[in-house]
Length: 160
Image (cartoon, rainbow, N blue to C red; front, side, top):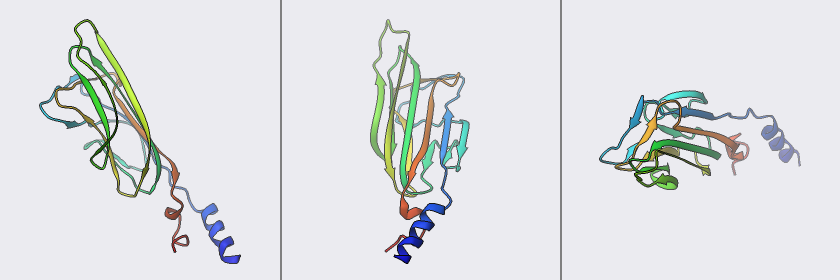
């Protein structure tokens, strides 16, 4: 009982890790299309608590294991396709897209996902080949935050 109480005390009083970021892709206007898939680098940071998002590579690396929420959105002209995919460790998770239309002046889209990550897992947004976005005026954004840290990350007392 005493050992269980000690574990509970450590979990309750352990310093909680805070991880949150929000960024926009700012490139002065139309960005793309490119001949190949491209990691979309959100270079304008609004917040980067925990420094887990790199605004020079576009990659978020989980500093601790836990449940994270990611949200991404875009604005694009209707003259080209727009297709963005949220990627976890190289695998597609969710996407948002719009097809090329002649009459449609602009397109907007977005998506979100809650992911269970291990420490070091990488999450980023990939823009499809021949796709584009309007990267001006903070219309293209990517945000994420830690919802709940895995208990084993709080302390080593919890390990078996």
